[in-house]
Figure 1: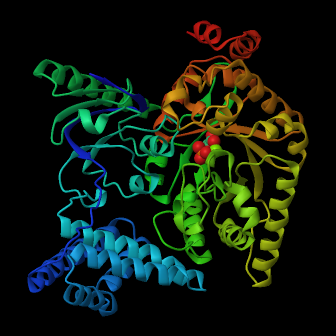
Figure 2: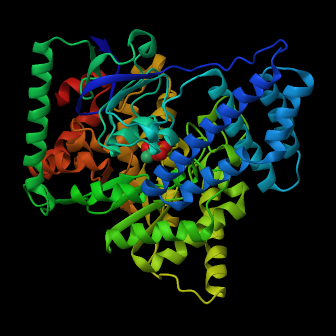
Figure 3: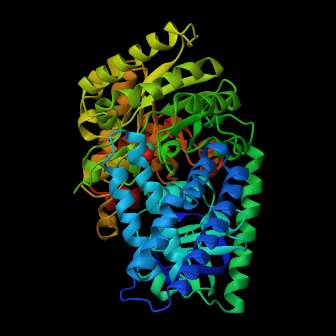
Length: 564
Ligand code: PEP
Ligand code: MG
């Protein structure tokens, strides 16, 4: 048995598809048969074109025309005679191998595009890189499984799966995932939970200890992986999977019920989403709203920022489908582990302490206001709450509000309507904001506590670093005291306080948070009914007492054993 971190519950049983990083080695030396080398290049071109066409078709039918556009652009590059003729000519005149010719010509084109004045042209360099790397892989016979083109059911095993790769996963073919890096609050893990895809992360050496096509069992709840299980083990896990399906069916009986304690205290259980496509799961699990829409995923996996119109359509769709239920849409939270290459955030030594979220938006007002205008235009289609991430000071709150007002005037100047009842709030995920919660509360309509980041900053533990993962501790008294303080200050100022970090669905802490007075719990849709069950079995007055007791304890160990 191999042990990693339990990132997303569920049992997956199937064959492994191991994605090993492959290096591209450019061949040196001269060719004697130039014609043969040219044919080799042409074959690689044809194969690349085939792959791109298939990707285009697939993405068009699953993710829509916006996302598919990128592959149209790739095909145009691949078929551009300026590029292909230059490569063929290099093979002929310099008598070099096709990989060397592709590499040299690609470097020249990339440098030329990168030096151009218009941003749009500079961004084409990335597309050229992508296309020419595909040709190189095909020349060398390197196979890279395309996650959106899988045809059989597999368990993916990789060093890392990026959030944008996650977004392209075809759920009909991927049964589960295993990665070597990442913690439970990495965005890959968060997305796996939203997709209800069993996942084990931080399993060291997974790509070398698991063989391709090996039969595996992934237990996402325990964080365990069983390579080559015997018949008895398979039977045990099949039974466990059946039990989980049955338990889920039982929970479905809570659909339509309020989230109320036995003594009548009501709270709201909402969903975290990363795209409009998650809404089926959200509604199936009876979320009472969307407590967090991570809009950065709209910006990923493409070469330019989404336009105002494109964003407007997405926000409108989400608001319409939520049909008047509160819908918290968070402005762009890029940076950290969420990289959007065309935004050109410089490589940083400490990306989680760096140029992220509102810090980036406030320095790129046009990008920020484009999003704000799209949100304001969409506001008339539902119950919009706008939320700013990574707030660390009052100044930032004021700046966000200033840009929102500018965006509002711009939208209204076009004769368009904007809802008069939009609420604006902030994430409390940086200790400096938590400490001045009393001050910030006077300037916003709601707080949402982002424990994923708050814990990493309070405990000084990088949420992605598995070497210090045991120090990343939601039960740390400092974390719990700070959360209590934020809830208390928010309520004193008469504003709503919710939580949208992963801690909101931690069953061991549900009663403690309830007792502290938390009213809005936002989580992966799969956790909602489980939490509703927990709340309906609780008493608010007992939870308040429990919270008071827990806040007196001095260590995480004491708190855990007290709660157990
Ligand atoms: C958080 O930090 O708790 C949060 C919800 O935001 P993200 O996980 O996207 O950083
Ligand atoms: Mg965060």
